[in-house]
Amino acid sequence: MVISWTVERVTPASLRTLSGISHCCQSVVSTALGPTAIERFKHDLLGQNGVRWVIILEGVNDISGSRSPKVATDLIAAYEQFIDKAHAQDILVYGVPILPFGGSMYDSEDHEAARQIVNKWIRTSGKFDAVIDMDAAVCDPANPTGLLPAYDTGDHLHLNVAGYQKMAEAIDLDLFKQTADLNKDSIVDFVDFAILAGQWRQIPGFPSADIAPPEGDGAVDLEDLYSMAQEWLVE
Image (cartoon, rainbow, N blue to C red):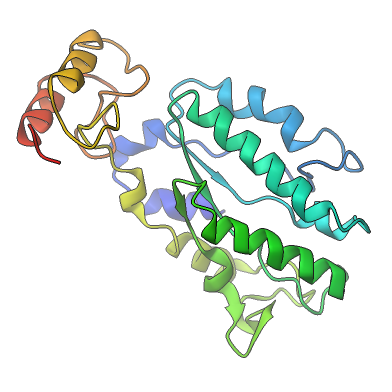
């Protein structure tokens, strides 16, 4: 649902590169709810063609089902695995702090402490390429450990339609724009042109030279060359 509202905010050309993969009742490291996100990450994400970005919002089921003080460090270690594996394929990774569940069946002092540890790491570690703070968007300012009542289905855990729309609105679409600095060395130079030349009139590779329009159009052509020329030697 969050993906659907996000799609409505982007241009039709970008839909070719936007894919939503979600898993109901999934855990990151706990096997109690079936195959874990760690086990499925390679197939469900890295194995898909044309992936450029991934948004990670995971962890609440691990926290809710754990009595171990290690759950926070286990989740952080899993996030680091996701980031490293995605970066190895030139995929940008955006982290989302775990949403509030105060007053729900998941609520306890230990669980909230674990959520706070994980969320602080997501926000401050610098490991993610960006942070999309949906937690801040849907929490109750008067009680940040819980959902704002306007976004609560009533169980203090699951969001209603307005809550999902608020999550979508928290996504900065500029995060999904491509620049001509393909090799990420902070300047557009001959190396970037060489990468573009290697993908000319072909399906975009990694890193993708399909940068025009900002979300790409599925082909490496004169529009991309023109966009790169505009950024020539710009840091």
